[in-house]
Image 1 (cartoon, helix red, strand yellow):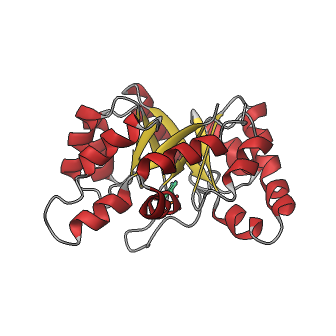
Image 2 (cartoon, rainbow, N blue to C red):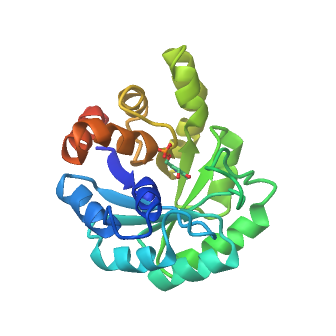
Length: 240
Ligand code: PXP
Protein backbone atom coordinates (compact mmCIF):
# COMPACT_ATOMS: atom_id res chain seq x y z
CA UNK A 1 0.00 0.00 0.00
CA UNK A 2 1.12 3.58 -0.66
CA UNK A 3 2.68 4.95 2.52
CA UNK A 4 1.61 8.18 4.16
CA UNK A 5 4.37 10.54 5.30
CA UNK A 6 3.05 13.49 7.26
CA UNK A 7 4.81 16.80 6.61
CA UNK A 8 4.85 18.61 9.96
CA UNK A 9 6.20 22.01 8.83
CA UNK A 10 2.89 23.75 9.57
CA UNK A 11 2.95 22.54 13.16
CA UNK A 12 6.32 24.25 13.56
CA UNK A 13 4.94 27.41 11.93
CA UNK A 14 2.22 27.52 14.57
CA UNK A 15 4.70 26.91 17.39
CA UNK A 16 7.08 29.60 16.11
CA UNK A 17 4.28 32.18 16.03
CA UNK A 18 4.58 32.51 19.85
CA UNK A 19 8.16 31.50 20.48
CA UNK A 20 7.36 28.82 23.07
CA UNK A 21 6.88 25.10 22.56
CA UNK A 22 3.14 24.94 21.85
CA UNK A 23 2.28 22.87 19.94
CA UNK A 24 5.14 20.49 20.67
CA UNK A 25 6.46 19.47 17.24
CA UNK A 26 8.28 16.41 18.50
CA UNK A 27 5.23 15.11 20.39
CA UNK A 28 3.08 15.76 17.34
CA UNK A 29 5.42 13.69 15.16
CA UNK A 30 5.34 10.86 17.68
CA UNK A 31 1.54 11.00 17.83
CA UNK A 32 1.25 10.95 14.02
CA UNK A 33 3.20 7.70 14.09
CA UNK A 34 1.01 6.31 16.88
CA UNK A 35 -2.06 7.10 14.77
CA UNK A 36 -0.69 5.28 11.74
CA UNK A 37 1.55 7.63 9.74
CA UNK A 38 4.27 5.64 8.05
CA UNK A 39 6.70 8.51 7.80
CA UNK A 40 7.48 12.02 8.99
CA UNK A 41 8.63 14.69 6.54
CA UNK A 42 10.29 18.00 7.34
CA UNK A 43 11.54 20.76 5.08
CA UNK A 44 14.06 22.82 7.05
CA UNK A 45 14.57 26.21 5.39
CA UNK A 46 17.74 28.28 5.74
CA UNK A 47 15.81 30.94 7.72
CA UNK A 48 14.31 28.26 10.06
CA UNK A 49 10.90 29.82 9.58
CA UNK A 50 9.21 26.55 10.50
CA UNK A 51 11.33 23.45 11.19
CA UNK A 52 14.62 24.34 12.88
CA UNK A 53 17.92 22.53 12.71
CA UNK A 54 17.42 21.58 16.37
CA UNK A 55 14.05 20.02 15.46
CA UNK A 56 15.73 17.91 12.79
CA UNK A 57 18.23 16.49 15.30
CA UNK A 58 15.50 15.89 17.92
CA UNK A 59 13.21 14.19 15.40
CA UNK A 60 15.95 11.87 14.22
CA UNK A 61 16.10 10.49 17.78
CA UNK A 62 12.41 9.81 18.07
CA UNK A 63 11.01 9.02 14.62
CA UNK A 64 10.64 5.26 14.35
CA UNK A 65 8.99 5.21 10.91
CA UNK A 66 10.61 6.72 7.80
CA UNK A 67 12.24 10.10 8.40
CA UNK A 68 12.31 12.17 5.20
CA UNK A 69 14.14 15.49 4.97
CA UNK A 70 13.36 17.71 1.99
CA UNK A 71 15.21 20.73 0.78
CA UNK A 72 17.50 22.46 -1.62
CA UNK A 73 20.91 20.80 -1.41
CA UNK A 74 22.88 23.91 -0.51
CA UNK A 75 26.03 23.18 1.56
CA UNK A 76 24.38 23.80 4.98
CA UNK A 77 21.45 21.52 4.07
CA UNK A 78 23.78 18.80 2.85
CA UNK A 79 25.85 18.95 6.04
CA UNK A 80 22.70 18.70 8.17
CA UNK A 81 21.34 15.71 6.25
CA UNK A 82 24.69 13.93 6.21
CA UNK A 83 25.01 14.45 9.98
CA UNK A 84 21.46 13.29 10.76
CA UNK A 85 21.29 10.43 8.23
CA UNK A 86 17.52 10.15 7.71
CA UNK A 87 16.05 7.22 5.80
CA UNK A 88 15.36 9.47 2.82
CA UNK A 89 16.37 12.87 1.49
CA UNK A 90 14.20 14.60 -1.11
CA UNK A 91 16.03 17.13 -3.26
CA UNK A 92 13.89 20.19 -4.03
CA UNK A 93 15.00 23.16 -6.19
CA UNK A 94 13.25 25.82 -4.11
CA UNK A 95 14.80 29.23 -3.68
CA UNK A 96 15.20 30.85 -0.25
CA UNK A 97 12.44 33.38 -0.73
CA UNK A 98 9.89 30.94 -2.16
CA UNK A 99 6.78 30.51 -0.01
CA UNK A 100 6.63 26.81 -0.91
CA UNK A 101 8.10 24.60 -3.62
CA UNK A 102 6.34 25.16 -6.93
CA UNK A 103 8.28 23.18 -9.53
CA UNK A 104 10.57 20.20 -9.86
CA UNK A 105 14.18 19.96 -10.99
CA UNK A 106 15.27 20.24 -14.56
CA UNK A 107 17.22 17.01 -14.13
CA UNK A 108 18.69 17.27 -17.62
CA UNK A 109 20.10 20.80 -17.20
CA UNK A 110 21.40 20.04 -13.67
CA UNK A 111 22.46 16.50 -14.42
CA UNK A 112 26.12 16.67 -13.35
CA UNK A 113 25.37 18.60 -10.15
CA UNK A 114 22.56 16.24 -9.17
CA UNK A 115 24.60 13.13 -9.94
CA UNK A 116 27.39 14.32 -7.60
CA UNK A 117 24.97 15.22 -4.79
CA UNK A 118 23.02 11.98 -5.11
CA UNK A 119 26.24 9.99 -4.91
CA UNK A 120 27.28 11.72 -1.68
CA UNK A 121 23.97 10.91 -0.01
CA UNK A 122 23.91 7.36 -1.31
CA UNK A 123 27.44 6.78 -0.04
CA UNK A 124 26.12 7.77 3.41
CA UNK A 125 23.37 5.14 3.12
CA UNK A 126 20.54 7.66 2.57
CA UNK A 127 17.87 6.94 -0.04
CA UNK A 128 17.57 9.83 -2.50
CA UNK A 129 14.36 11.06 -4.06
CA UNK A 130 14.34 13.89 -6.62
CA UNK A 131 11.37 16.25 -6.88
CA UNK A 132 10.32 16.55 -10.55
CA UNK A 133 7.44 17.81 -12.63
CA UNK A 134 5.31 15.15 -14.32
CA UNK A 135 7.61 14.94 -17.35
CA UNK A 136 8.99 11.53 -18.39
CA UNK A 137 12.24 13.11 -19.57
CA UNK A 138 12.85 14.59 -16.10
CA UNK A 139 12.16 11.17 -14.59
CA UNK A 140 14.59 9.57 -17.04
CA UNK A 141 17.43 11.99 -16.18
CA UNK A 142 16.77 11.58 -12.46
CA UNK A 143 17.30 7.84 -12.95
CA UNK A 144 20.46 8.43 -14.98
CA UNK A 145 21.78 10.71 -12.22
CA UNK A 146 21.43 7.79 -9.80
CA UNK A 147 18.26 8.70 -7.87
CA UNK A 148 16.47 5.90 -6.03
CA UNK A 149 13.10 7.58 -6.39
CA UNK A 150 11.37 10.58 -7.90
CA UNK A 151 8.70 12.62 -6.17
CA UNK A 152 6.16 13.93 -8.68
CA UNK A 153 5.15 17.53 -7.99
CA UNK A 154 1.36 17.25 -7.75
CA UNK A 155 0.50 20.96 -7.58
CA UNK A 156 -0.79 21.01 -11.20
CA UNK A 157 -2.58 17.70 -10.60
CA UNK A 158 -4.54 19.21 -7.73
CA UNK A 159 -5.40 22.32 -9.69
CA UNK A 160 -6.66 20.49 -12.76
CA UNK A 161 -8.32 17.71 -10.75
CA UNK A 162 -10.75 20.25 -9.34
CA UNK A 163 -12.12 20.83 -12.89
CA UNK A 164 -11.38 17.60 -14.74
CA UNK A 165 -10.14 14.59 -12.72
CA UNK A 166 -9.53 12.38 -15.75
CA UNK A 167 -7.42 14.98 -17.52
CA UNK A 168 -5.41 15.51 -14.34
CA UNK A 169 -4.68 11.79 -14.03
CA UNK A 170 -3.80 11.45 -17.73
CA UNK A 171 -1.27 14.28 -17.40
CA UNK A 172 0.67 12.27 -14.80
CA UNK A 173 0.48 8.86 -16.47
CA UNK A 174 3.55 9.12 -18.79
CA UNK A 175 5.86 10.22 -15.95
CA UNK A 176 4.49 7.66 -13.49
CA UNK A 177 4.87 4.91 -16.10
CA UNK A 178 8.40 6.02 -16.95
CA UNK A 179 9.35 5.65 -13.27
CA UNK A 180 7.89 2.16 -13.19
CA UNK A 181 9.62 1.19 -16.45
CA UNK A 182 12.98 2.41 -15.06
CA UNK A 183 12.37 0.65 -11.72
CA UNK A 184 12.60 3.96 -9.88
CA UNK A 185 10.61 4.33 -6.70
CA UNK A 186 7.69 6.73 -7.00
CA UNK A 187 6.65 9.36 -4.46
CA UNK A 188 4.23 12.24 -4.89
CA UNK A 189 3.48 15.41 -3.03
CA UNK A 190 2.08 18.91 -2.95
CA UNK A 191 -1.55 19.96 -2.63
CA UNK A 192 -2.78 16.40 -2.17
CA UNK A 193 -5.91 16.29 -0.04
CA UNK A 194 -8.85 14.09 0.94
CA UNK A 195 -10.64 14.88 -2.35
CA UNK A 196 -7.91 14.21 -4.88
CA UNK A 197 -5.70 11.60 -3.17
CA UNK A 198 -7.73 8.43 -3.63
CA UNK A 199 -7.94 8.68 -7.44
CA UNK A 200 -4.23 9.41 -7.72
CA UNK A 201 -3.22 6.43 -5.61
CA UNK A 202 -5.62 4.13 -7.46
CA UNK A 203 -4.44 5.29 -10.90
CA UNK A 204 -0.80 4.58 -10.02
CA UNK A 205 -0.82 1.58 -7.71
CA UNK A 206 2.98 1.39 -7.80
CA UNK A 207 3.11 4.72 -5.93
CA UNK A 208 5.39 4.12 -2.92
CA UNK A 209 4.70 7.18 -0.79
CA UNK A 210 2.89 10.48 -0.55
CA UNK A 211 4.01 13.34 1.66
CA UNK A 212 1.22 15.62 2.73
CA UNK A 213 1.27 18.66 4.96
CA UNK A 214 -0.90 21.68 4.35
CA UNK A 215 -4.31 20.09 3.70
CA UNK A 216 -3.78 17.35 6.26
CA UNK A 217 -2.97 19.79 9.04
CA UNK A 218 -5.92 21.99 8.01
CA UNK A 219 -8.22 18.93 8.12
CA UNK A 220 -6.90 18.12 11.59
CA UNK A 221 -8.30 21.45 12.87
CA UNK A 222 -11.77 20.03 12.26
CA UNK A 223 -11.28 16.29 12.60
CA UNK A 224 -8.39 15.97 15.02
CA UNK A 225 -5.10 14.45 13.93
CA UNK A 226 -6.01 10.84 14.77
CA UNK A 227 -9.18 10.84 12.64
CA UNK A 228 -7.44 12.81 9.89
CA UNK A 229 -4.65 10.26 9.54
CA UNK A 230 -7.25 7.50 9.50
CA UNK A 231 -9.09 9.19 6.63
CA UNK A 232 -5.92 9.79 4.58
CA UNK A 233 -4.91 6.16 5.06
CA UNK A 234 -8.38 5.07 4.02
CA UNK A 235 -7.97 7.11 0.81
CA UNK A 236 -4.78 5.14 0.14
CA UNK A 237 -6.20 1.77 1.13
CA UNK A 238 -7.14 0.60 -2.37
CA UNK A 239 -3.87 1.72 -3.89
CA UNK A 240 -2.24 -1.71 -4.28
N1 PXP B 1 6.67 17.61 -1.26
C1 PXP B 1 7.52 18.67 -1.31
C2 PXP B 1 8.80 18.52 -2.05
C3 PXP B 1 7.19 19.87 -0.66
O1 PXP B 1 8.04 20.91 -0.72
C4 PXP B 1 5.99 19.95 0.06
C5 PXP B 1 5.66 21.21 0.80
O2 PXP B 1 6.59 21.42 1.83
C6 PXP B 1 5.15 18.83 0.09
C7 PXP B 1 5.51 17.68 -0.60
C8 PXP B 1 3.85 18.82 0.82
O3 PXP B 1 2.97 19.70 0.19
P1 PXP B 1 1.60 20.13 0.91
O4 PXP B 1 1.99 20.89 2.13
O5 PXP B 1 0.89 20.95 -0.12
O6 PXP B 1 0.88 18.86 1.25
